Length: 154
Image (cartoon, rainbow, N blue to C red):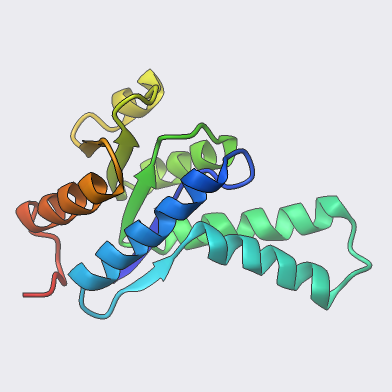
C-alpha cells in the first residue's frame, strides 16, 4: 500500500514538522508492506535535484519537484493529510487527489481553521480532530482500524 502524507512544510513551524514522525510511526505500525511518502521525501527529492544539477534555475527545480510531488499523489492508495497549518502546495495535492477520487483521511488540531473547500470537496472523508500528539496517535490508529482499510496489520 502506498500512502501519501500531506501537510505544510515551508510555511510551518518546528512543532508542525515534528508531527510527521507521529504520523509515520502510526502508519508504519498499522499497515502491512506500506510505502510512505512524507513531506520530507518531497523536500529531499528537491535537494537531490539541486545537488545533481546545480545549474538549474529555481523555476526548473520547482517544476521538477511539483511534478514529482503530484505524481506521488496520483500513485498513492491513501492520502493522510494534516490540515493544522495552511499550505498552497497541500491544496494542489488535494485537488489532484480529488480528481483521482483518492481516499483521504484528514487530521487537524482542534483549534485549527478548516476551509469550506476541504469539507465541501470531501463530504464523506474521515476528519479527525486531536488535542495533542498522543491524542493524534490514538485517534488516527482507531479510525484506520474502524474504517477497515486494506492491508491493515491484523
